[in-house]
Image (cartoon, rainbow, N blue to C red):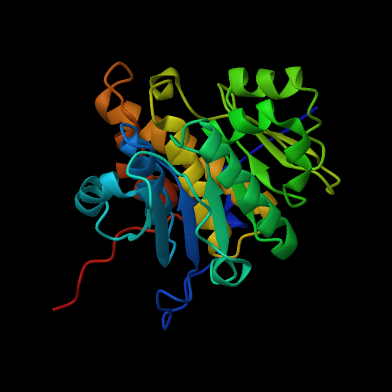
Length: 285
């Protein structure tokens, strides 16, 4: 039987933030997200990542998405593809990838052949250097078409499929036992490898979260936590719970019918405070 996540369990997982910390202290994440026409996926995942407490975020985008990302996510560093419409080339080396603490791949990237080949080459490099990863959305759809590539994912990689994406992986004969599986839904379930307690159930969340972009936000949150040095298990437990709690807080304030993915990001601070029992400190004058 899965273990149900509790607030007390989460309190013990949250890392303290050193008073003398700087942006380098809290990690540098790399996000591969958003094709032309799907820039919003990159925005939502990127904003979720930044709200999770990460120090720096670099987002790889088609160059035609530049203005959208600069305006919607001014905190991010942008890395441009030579293509204006999609991820067409890897444009990274093992050396440049080593500067990042964690990598997230998938939201809105599309499943075209050039993108698939760029993903393959990137996975080959990441397999060699073993960086923490979260893989979602179109990256999972590509892997379902190329199941032989799934073994390139470093052990412990987090994958975050919704039920249809998971079904595609199963139809392709892919075994997910070597990765951490976060199966999105209500309730969301988490399955881990190399642990005594191998599965968990998130008791929070609501049907207002069943809206476009909600999964992109979750990818960003988990990515940001991985980049901050959380291990795969803790990043997954905290990420799923913060995402769900944010949805519940937003639903209480806005109602379920009108909930959108951006609302989850806006209520992440309250979700963190709910776990840590901290309040916003008034500035002393």
